[in-house]
Length: 66
Image 1 (cartoon, one colour):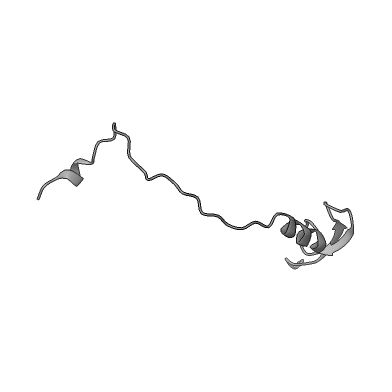
Image 2 (cartoon, rainbow, N blue to C red):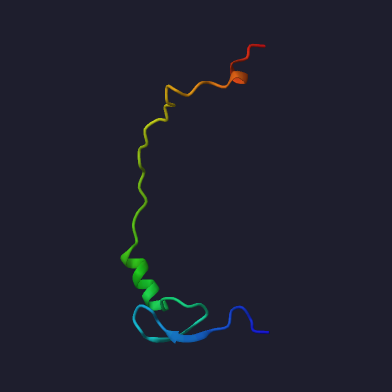
């Protein structure tokens, strides 16, 4: 039975270099380049407070007086 993490030789789909990697995809050099190219800082986005529509009625159980 073949091990799950067996390295395979294939052409990198990004730069066409012949590489030996465990999984198919961009080679290590391309992955580093892609991370550097698309690296961005997180940002906070303000979202308006949720206000239910007027046609929504409260649950009868929630309004029940004990």
